[in-house]
Length: 288
Image (cartoon, rainbow, N blue to C red; front, side, top):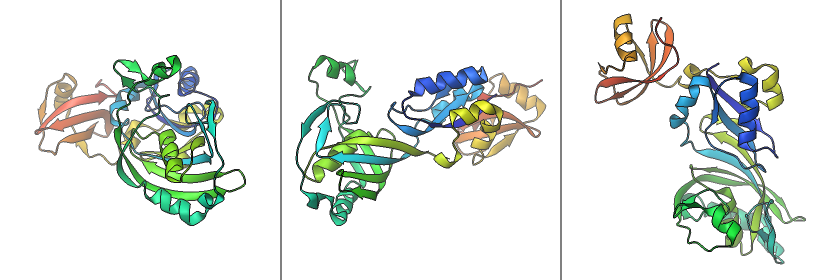
């Protein structure tokens, strides 16, 4: 079994938990292309078998989330799993629809964001959460991110919560975004719920629960060939295929990029073209 499976991760499990469970089901090597926190749910993309080699092409995807933000309180982790650090009363005028929508619109575009202290980003050779756990102060360098779109979904005035949908670039910390939105609204806040609904071309509507996957894994593993349907193909003769598989670079008058490789109608894997030279990349099927 070589391919990709889109798991709808439930709350309470780590991404590693999901990988372990799927590995036991398929009895193959399994990897993921980006973790979700235990409190988060939604699209988790797993690579199975030889498709794990394809992760280098899937780690820079843009993402879409549905987010819930509580206003008037903040925690040390900027999410519901942390300790409450501060509480304050908020003016209910903050929760007017027009005010929130105008505030959210200000976050669209390229910007710099400071990641949360409880994150795995390394500064001076140590992960930020290691500094946090020891109570050490460290300067966190900002990172460039891009918010492509953000729109209000719901306002819960009684519980002082807002829900919104956001599309963002790789590297965006939604917890930090929540903190920044709360600040722009004139208060404090933290993320109480997070659901990833899209990862690149992979949508939540195409995902499967762990229970469904376990019942019929082969039904839900998407072949690498299908994932690459937008990539151009190169058909190699038996002789050229043998050279290709042995690591010989072949002349190919194509644009630089990743191509699907075929021998007749048999999908072999992928090859890359650079400066009109084709070389092997990910091989799923060797020649007989």
